Length: 128
Image (cartoon, rainbow, N blue to C red; front, side, top):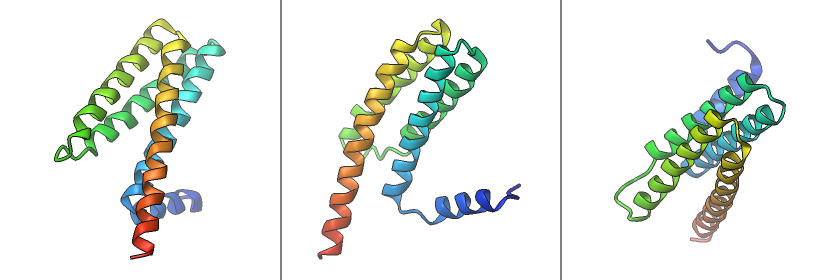
C-alpha cells in the first residue's frame, strides 16, 4: 500500500510516463542496482550485493518482457540482456565485481543510446 507522498509521486510518474521515459526509468533502476551490488561486493557486504544484483536481474527481465519482437533488433537485444543476466549471476556467485562492471558498461551505453533515440523521436514529433 502506498502511504508516503514520495511513493504516491513515484506511482504517478510511472502511470503517466510515456513509453520511452519508462524504458529510461528501467535502465536507471538497473544501473542503480548494479552499482549498489558492486558496492556490496567491494564492502564484502554479500547480503547487499546479493539483494541488489538480484534486483538488477529483475529489471533486466522487465526489459526483455518489454521487447517487441516484430523488430529484428529485439532478438539481438534479448541476447544481450540474457548475457547481462548471466554475468550478474556470475558476479553474485563468485562475489566478483568484474562481471558486474561489464554489465554496468553495457547498461550505461544502452541507456545513452535509448535516450538519444527518445530525444530524436520527441524532436521529430514536435516539428511535425
